[in-house]
Image (cartoon, rainbow, N blue to C red; front, side, top):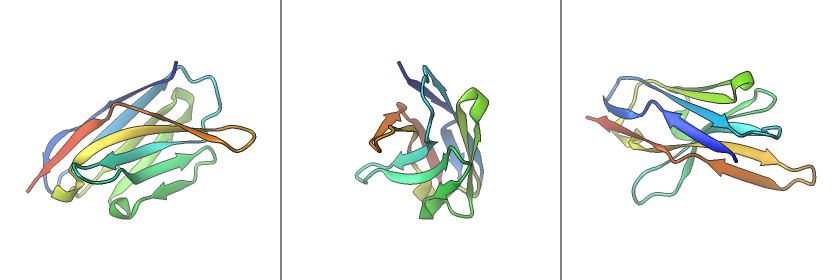
Length: 120
């Protein structure tokens, strides 16, 4: 059973930094991508940053230039370094593991989420 455990969220003032971590357990397959999404109240879930199995990173627009995703493949752990945080970054940050089957179907696993609140 795949489990994703996020940590590192909290309350921080605007302009400060936070580092999120997500450890995946129960992985018995090749992870095609691992990373972070976020969801703010009343808004759709959006991409923050992901890294695929080849090390290529993809960032959502709000994260570009401020956030950095990294991964410890040997430990199935992904990190999100968030700098210069803004109040609009306030959201629940969700860890994601993507599995792509040989025939192309994708299945996503999600963590419970960690709250990040940025005060002005």
